[in-house]
Image (cartoon, rainbow, N blue to C red; front, side, top):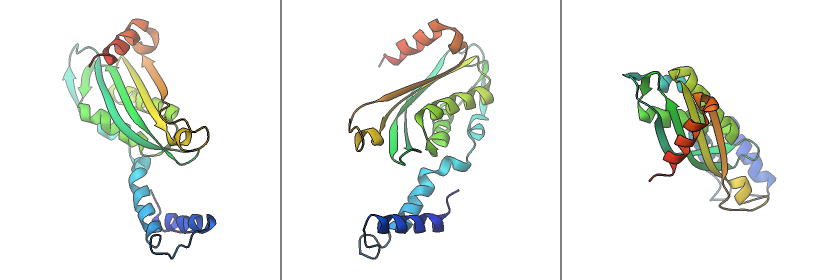
Length: 186
């Protein structure tokens, strides 16, 4: 959980470190604003995805379930800059499904932490496998990283794509192809 006092002090030191006057009008309340913002951005630190995935419904032979274009925002642990994009989740239920909003909530649990995209993608897939016990899971994340856009190489619009496959999706190329074909439909 976020310790507001420590964050506020750190922001004051950072502002002083870059040569700012922490007492000037526009900055006086900035440490408090940043601390409140960090509580929101890092709300996933103490959250458990299993809580969201525990409410299930029976669904015999339901076939592949895909929830696509789930928007997410996260913060890269390397530069503490945002990365954001969309996550697509496919799973093969084995008798039970979860409410589709719970998949989006699962994304939020892991996105609201200091993260790297590769880990985020895998954590979502693993949480679904552990909680729902489906035959397989495939998670694809597409994101733009501000560390690539506004600093360093400065390549706005570039996308990083990561994929985590578990269970039947690992072994069955036909299933993977079916997922990618379904992703191309509008």
